[in-house]
Image 1: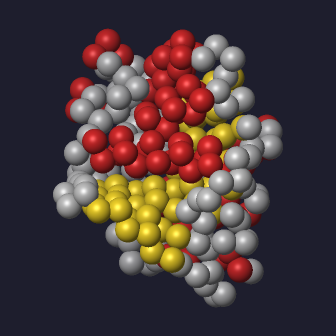
Image 2: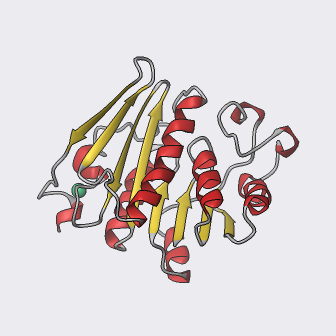
Image 3: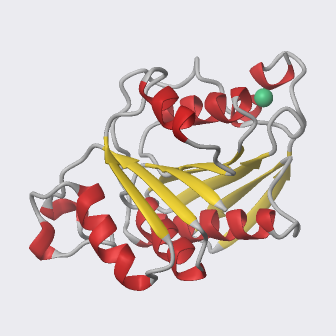
Length: 216
Ligand SMILES: [Zn+2]
């Protein structure tokens, strides 16, 4: 199984650790950030000795020690409509997974998944709250069927967060990839809403929007 992971911070840390430990065949990570001390409360893939270094480089160094049989590809890059094409040309992936910290990238990952028929998992977090969706392109409802890009502030930066929240949502993203690959029940046509203040997990059934990009 070949997985393309977009972002390697709070969500991406547990996601990459669990998928590597599980022994997936190949994990390709794209991230453009350098590790800052303020990242360490939630980005558990990294430690103090790696501050100031490229995250993808440090991520690869750690992950290969977990499971030498998993091929880890690490690319320091921004993801946009053009740059992603290079990576999609290189090989055929089974999944694209959003571990980014902004809405713009989440909508882009969703679009890429639909255009390239890639299974997809997208999670979002804010302080003690999160949500996660799994997409079977053109078959199930997509991220944009549920969330509107128009209502999203265009320059939204990283959202404030407590470290455990991306820990749980990133772990659930890994679980979704593994369950989907095994043909087990997943979050297609559903959004899981996670409330870590009240410790509530609610599943909302969603339907494919016939006017959405996933229906054309
Ligand atoms: Zn849609």
